[in-house]
Length: 34
Image (cartoon, rainbow, N blue to C red; front, side, top):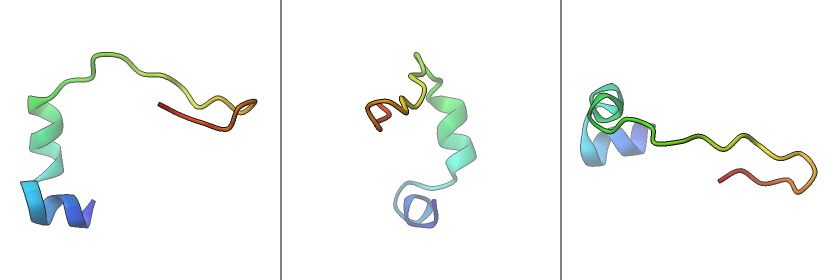
């Protein structure tokens, strides 16, 4: 997060401007998250 704040600014403002479209939970069988 610190690196992102240095490059694009405050993370909270970025999250407010760019809402989640969908969320895929972690899959413990295949060990991945999209």
